[in-house]
Image 1 (cartoon, rainbow, N blue to C red):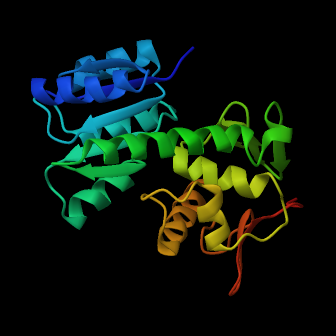
Image 2 (cartoon, one colour; image 1 turned 45 degrees about the horizontal axis):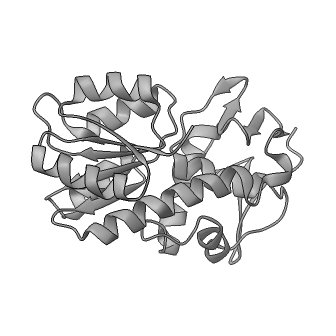
Image 3 (cartoon, rainbow, N blue to C red; image 1 turned 30 degrees about the vertical axis):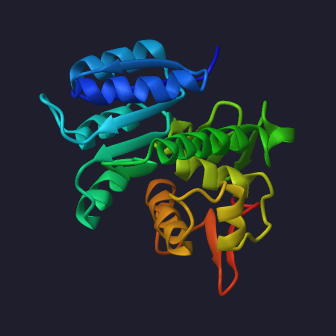
Length: 236
Protein backbone atom coordinates (compact mmCIF):
# COMPACT_ATOMS: atom_id res chain seq x y z
CA UNK A 1 0.00 0.00 0.00
CA UNK A 2 1.40 3.36 -1.03
CA UNK A 3 1.50 6.67 0.80
CA UNK A 4 -1.95 8.23 0.98
CA UNK A 5 -2.52 11.81 2.15
CA UNK A 6 -5.99 12.93 3.23
CA UNK A 7 -7.42 16.44 3.48
CA UNK A 8 -10.55 17.56 5.35
CA UNK A 9 -11.35 21.10 4.15
CA UNK A 10 -14.52 22.66 2.75
CA UNK A 11 -12.71 25.10 0.43
CA UNK A 12 -12.69 23.68 -3.16
CA UNK A 13 -9.71 25.81 -4.15
CA UNK A 14 -7.71 24.49 -1.18
CA UNK A 15 -8.73 20.93 -2.05
CA UNK A 16 -7.47 21.40 -5.61
CA UNK A 17 -4.22 23.06 -4.51
CA UNK A 18 -3.28 20.37 -2.01
CA UNK A 19 -4.34 17.59 -4.39
CA UNK A 20 -1.93 18.98 -6.99
CA UNK A 21 0.90 19.22 -4.43
CA UNK A 22 0.33 15.66 -3.20
CA UNK A 23 -0.17 13.95 -6.56
CA UNK A 24 2.84 15.76 -8.03
CA UNK A 25 4.87 14.02 -5.32
CA UNK A 26 3.50 10.65 -6.51
CA UNK A 27 1.30 10.04 -3.47
CA UNK A 28 -2.37 9.09 -3.39
CA UNK A 29 -4.88 11.73 -2.32
CA UNK A 30 -8.36 11.68 -0.82
CA UNK A 31 -10.45 14.45 0.71
CA UNK A 32 -13.71 15.42 2.35
CA UNK A 33 -15.53 18.74 2.72
CA UNK A 34 -16.94 18.24 6.20
CA UNK A 35 -16.17 16.43 9.44
CA UNK A 36 -18.76 13.65 9.23
CA UNK A 37 -17.70 12.59 5.73
CA UNK A 38 -14.08 13.04 6.70
CA UNK A 39 -14.30 10.61 9.61
CA UNK A 40 -16.07 8.04 7.46
CA UNK A 41 -13.49 8.31 4.68
CA UNK A 42 -10.59 8.22 7.13
CA UNK A 43 -11.87 5.01 8.72
CA UNK A 44 -12.23 3.43 5.28
CA UNK A 45 -9.10 4.71 3.53
CA UNK A 46 -6.68 4.63 6.51
CA UNK A 47 -4.42 7.42 5.17
CA UNK A 48 -0.75 7.81 6.05
CA UNK A 49 -1.20 11.48 6.99
CA UNK A 50 -4.14 13.82 7.62
CA UNK A 51 -4.32 17.54 6.87
CA UNK A 52 -7.23 18.96 8.84
CA UNK A 53 -8.83 22.40 8.56
CA UNK A 54 -9.87 23.95 11.87
CA UNK A 55 -13.08 25.63 10.63
CA UNK A 56 -15.54 23.24 8.98
CA UNK A 57 -19.29 23.56 8.30
CA UNK A 58 -20.51 20.84 10.66
CA UNK A 59 -17.88 20.59 13.44
CA UNK A 60 -14.50 22.09 14.23
CA UNK A 61 -11.23 20.35 13.50
CA UNK A 62 -10.29 20.12 17.17
CA UNK A 63 -13.31 17.90 17.88
CA UNK A 64 -12.53 15.75 14.84
CA UNK A 65 -8.96 15.31 16.06
CA UNK A 66 -10.18 14.26 19.51
CA UNK A 67 -12.51 11.68 17.98
CA UNK A 68 -9.68 10.24 15.88
CA UNK A 69 -7.43 9.93 18.93
CA UNK A 70 -10.21 8.46 21.08
CA UNK A 71 -10.62 5.76 18.43
CA UNK A 72 -6.96 4.91 18.91
CA UNK A 73 -5.85 6.01 15.44
CA UNK A 74 -2.16 7.00 15.19
CA UNK A 75 -2.30 8.84 11.86
CA UNK A 76 -0.18 12.02 12.07
CA UNK A 77 -2.44 15.09 11.97
CA UNK A 78 -1.52 18.60 10.83
CA UNK A 79 -4.00 21.43 11.33
CA UNK A 80 -4.54 24.15 8.75
CA UNK A 81 -5.86 27.46 10.02
CA UNK A 82 -5.87 31.16 9.21
CA UNK A 83 -5.54 31.75 12.94
CA UNK A 84 -1.93 31.77 14.06
CA UNK A 85 -2.34 32.74 17.69
CA UNK A 86 -0.93 30.55 20.42
CA UNK A 87 -4.37 29.82 21.91
CA UNK A 88 -5.49 27.95 18.81
CA UNK A 89 -2.17 26.13 18.59
CA UNK A 90 -2.39 25.06 22.21
CA UNK A 91 -5.93 23.74 21.73
CA UNK A 92 -4.83 21.89 18.60
CA UNK A 93 -1.86 20.16 20.21
CA UNK A 94 -3.89 19.29 23.30
CA UNK A 95 -6.48 17.68 21.02
CA UNK A 96 -3.75 15.33 19.77
CA UNK A 97 -2.37 17.10 16.70
CA UNK A 98 1.22 16.70 15.56
CA UNK A 99 1.68 19.96 13.67
CA UNK A 100 -0.01 23.26 12.85
CA UNK A 101 0.35 25.21 9.59
CA UNK A 102 -1.04 28.73 9.24
CA UNK A 103 -2.65 29.92 6.00
CA UNK A 104 -1.45 31.27 3.68
CA UNK A 105 1.49 28.90 3.36
CA UNK A 106 4.19 28.11 0.82
CA UNK A 107 3.57 24.90 -1.10
CA UNK A 108 7.10 23.74 -0.37
CA UNK A 109 6.64 24.26 3.36
CA UNK A 110 3.55 22.05 3.43
CA UNK A 111 5.38 19.35 1.48
CA UNK A 112 8.46 19.49 3.71
CA UNK A 113 6.34 19.16 6.84
CA UNK A 114 4.42 16.18 5.48
CA UNK A 115 7.66 14.47 4.49
CA UNK A 116 9.18 15.12 7.92
CA UNK A 117 6.22 13.54 9.70
CA UNK A 118 6.16 10.52 7.39
CA UNK A 119 9.90 10.09 7.92
CA UNK A 120 9.52 10.29 11.70
CA UNK A 121 6.72 7.73 11.67
CA UNK A 122 8.85 5.34 9.62
CA UNK A 123 11.84 5.89 11.90
CA UNK A 124 9.77 5.30 15.02
CA UNK A 125 8.91 1.85 13.71
CA UNK A 126 12.02 0.88 11.76
CA UNK A 127 14.77 3.36 12.64
CA UNK A 128 16.08 3.28 16.17
CA UNK A 129 13.72 0.39 16.97
CA UNK A 130 14.44 -1.67 13.87
CA UNK A 131 15.62 -4.72 15.80
CA UNK A 132 12.38 -4.71 17.80
CA UNK A 133 9.99 -3.77 14.99
CA UNK A 134 8.07 -7.02 15.18
CA UNK A 135 8.23 -7.27 18.96
CA UNK A 136 7.59 -5.25 22.07
CA UNK A 137 9.20 -4.02 25.27
CA UNK A 138 7.53 -4.54 28.65
CA UNK A 139 8.35 -3.10 32.03
CA UNK A 140 5.91 -3.53 34.88
CA UNK A 141 2.38 -3.19 33.51
CA UNK A 142 3.50 -1.00 30.57
CA UNK A 143 4.17 -2.55 27.15
CA UNK A 144 5.31 -0.80 23.96
CA UNK A 145 4.48 -2.64 20.72
CA UNK A 146 6.85 -1.22 18.11
CA UNK A 147 5.45 -2.79 14.96
CA UNK A 148 1.84 -2.16 15.99
CA UNK A 149 2.60 1.49 16.90
CA UNK A 150 0.74 0.84 20.15
CA UNK A 151 1.19 1.17 23.91
CA UNK A 152 -0.74 -0.82 26.51
CA UNK A 153 -1.06 -0.33 30.26
CA UNK A 154 -2.59 -3.17 32.31
CA UNK A 155 -3.48 -4.76 28.96
CA UNK A 156 -5.50 -1.75 27.82
CA UNK A 157 -4.53 0.48 24.86
CA UNK A 158 -3.25 3.91 25.89
CA UNK A 159 -4.45 6.74 23.64
CA UNK A 160 -1.21 8.46 22.61
CA UNK A 161 -0.67 10.88 19.75
CA UNK A 162 1.89 9.82 17.14
CA UNK A 163 4.50 12.19 18.59
CA UNK A 164 3.90 10.87 22.10
CA UNK A 165 4.28 7.29 20.89
CA UNK A 166 7.47 8.13 18.98
CA UNK A 167 9.06 9.68 22.06
CA UNK A 168 8.15 6.70 24.22
CA UNK A 169 9.33 4.25 21.52
CA UNK A 170 12.73 5.99 21.38
CA UNK A 171 13.19 5.49 25.13
CA UNK A 172 11.81 1.93 25.02
CA UNK A 173 14.27 0.95 22.28
CA UNK A 174 17.10 1.41 24.79
CA UNK A 175 15.50 1.06 28.25
CA UNK A 176 17.48 2.39 31.17
CA UNK A 177 19.59 4.66 28.96
CA UNK A 178 19.27 8.40 29.42
CA UNK A 179 18.36 10.58 26.42
CA UNK A 180 18.86 14.34 26.47
CA UNK A 181 16.11 16.53 25.04
CA UNK A 182 18.39 17.33 22.11
CA UNK A 183 18.94 13.63 21.38
CA UNK A 184 15.20 13.01 21.45
CA UNK A 185 14.62 15.93 19.06
CA UNK A 186 17.23 14.47 16.70
CA UNK A 187 15.66 10.99 16.87
CA UNK A 188 12.25 12.48 16.13
CA UNK A 189 13.59 14.05 12.95
CA UNK A 190 14.10 17.64 14.10
CA UNK A 191 10.99 18.90 12.27
CA UNK A 192 9.58 22.38 12.77
CA UNK A 193 7.03 20.88 15.17
CA UNK A 194 9.73 19.47 17.48
CA UNK A 195 12.76 21.77 17.62
CA UNK A 196 12.30 23.33 21.04
CA UNK A 197 13.43 21.35 24.12
CA UNK A 198 10.39 22.74 25.93
CA UNK A 199 8.21 20.78 23.48
CA UNK A 200 9.83 17.58 24.72
CA UNK A 201 9.02 18.60 28.29
CA UNK A 202 5.36 19.08 27.33
CA UNK A 203 5.21 15.71 25.54
CA UNK A 204 6.73 13.97 28.56
CA UNK A 205 4.14 15.57 30.84
CA UNK A 206 1.30 14.42 28.56
CA UNK A 207 2.66 10.87 28.37
CA UNK A 208 2.98 10.70 32.14
CA UNK A 209 -0.61 11.84 32.56
CA UNK A 210 -1.63 8.80 30.50
CA UNK A 211 0.68 6.06 31.78
CA UNK A 212 1.57 6.99 35.37
CA UNK A 213 -0.58 6.35 38.41
CA UNK A 214 0.98 9.45 39.97
CA UNK A 215 2.48 11.70 37.25
CA UNK A 216 4.28 13.78 39.88
CA UNK A 217 6.19 10.64 40.99
CA UNK A 218 6.64 8.62 37.76
CA UNK A 219 7.55 4.95 37.85
CA UNK A 220 8.05 4.47 34.10
CA UNK A 221 9.10 7.67 32.31
CA UNK A 222 11.73 9.04 34.64
CA UNK A 223 13.65 12.32 34.73
CA UNK A 224 17.40 12.25 35.26
CA UNK A 225 18.07 15.64 36.82
CA UNK A 226 20.00 18.06 34.57
CA UNK A 227 20.44 15.36 31.90
CA UNK A 228 17.22 14.14 30.31
CA UNK A 229 14.79 11.20 30.41
CA UNK A 230 14.80 7.43 30.47
CA UNK A 231 12.30 4.58 30.50
CA UNK A 232 12.75 2.50 33.61
CA UNK A 233 13.92 -1.02 32.76
CA UNK A 234 12.92 -2.80 35.99
CA UNK A 235 9.50 -1.71 37.22
CA UNK A 236 7.84 -4.21 39.51
